[in-house]
Length: 433
Ligand code: GDP
Ligand code: IMO
Ligand code: MG
Picture 1 (tube, rainbow, N blue to C red):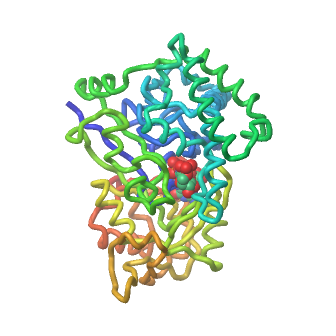
Picture 2: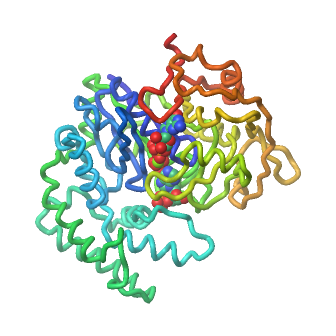
Picture 3: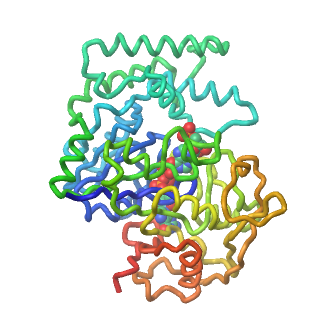
């Protein structure tokens, strides 16, 4: 009996999860997404191509690997079809190795309108949502109003669809908005809805499954599975900086509910973090930089959202936040990405503790949500050289190794992979000499 390994982000998302999953896929029989939806943007680069996935797991480019969209994931049929079409342009027919849970919930076109309406009504306290309908769709799931992939195969689907849509339209009307004036992805509502509904008729071309049985049976049959997280631990609905979070459990616990595996079946937990921090959207960010260093990281790291194109906020690495995420997830192995982005710095900083309420602390209290933490930094010398083409750990500059060693000493988990560029080949495995 195998256990399921987990790979997830330890910061505020965009840690480079997609790239690493793609690199690790040859080691696994299956890759499974367990939460989130098209708010995710997972970038893969190889053979000079760059590809961004939103709903489809990042193992899809490996023909022999089964990719599973679990019950915890939200699917917008329009975005899903666009992803399928883009893969076809790259000669990948996802119908061959993609399986979708019948219990995965749907994001209706009206969920997207509601997301925009609710964000608008928040005024200055906007979450900075990706506006993909995530909050409203998970709300309907919890309120037991939601529609699922399996429902699309039932004869009364359109009836159920219209029922939920009409509930949403009432809410929109109550906000003094007219459906004719609202757009989704530069389309009128009815155009978007028509395209979305067309996909319903093609869903039976995919393998729609009871994914919890499929996954548990696969583990019994000694198949290896990697669960791919979306967003990051600090955006978790329970433990992130509420309300500036996403609407799902992004941490390891989400694997159990989002795929239907019991906690004793969790194997390795691979935590991915950037060598610095970024955040897109609103909310507290203790180590955020507002100076040239922040600008430099944004430019060199190409820190602009994969899903929305928004500039990402940038800051130094935050050890207490990393330790928090490690604790919540039970991380067994660390993977550091984007280390090359720090090539050109004389001095680097790492946050080791915070000043809060006239005390020095190294945890994240409830009050962190009110932006009340001031970071204390340790200065570390930079390596000041280009490391993008280095292939082995031993060849890395001593100062870079010191930077990584400093992190390891402060989190007590080994760093097993170092990513030194966006391409598949720019990945250094610590243990391979
Ligand atoms: P994800 O959401 O965690 O999959 O991450 P994103 O794809 O949204 O953002 C990560 C960005 O950094 C993408 O543009 C990747 O191509 C890029 N990337 C990943 N790893 C590295 C790395 O080690 N160095 C550099 N320079 N870029 C990287
Ligand atoms: P990946 O998987 C970074 C952020 C949004 C916003 C908040 C809530 O690519 O790492 P939502 O659309 O969920 O209502 O937005 O969460 N957010 C992400 N930030 N990476 C992501 O995904 C994100 N998904 C959501 O910017 O602040
Ligand atoms: Mg992303």
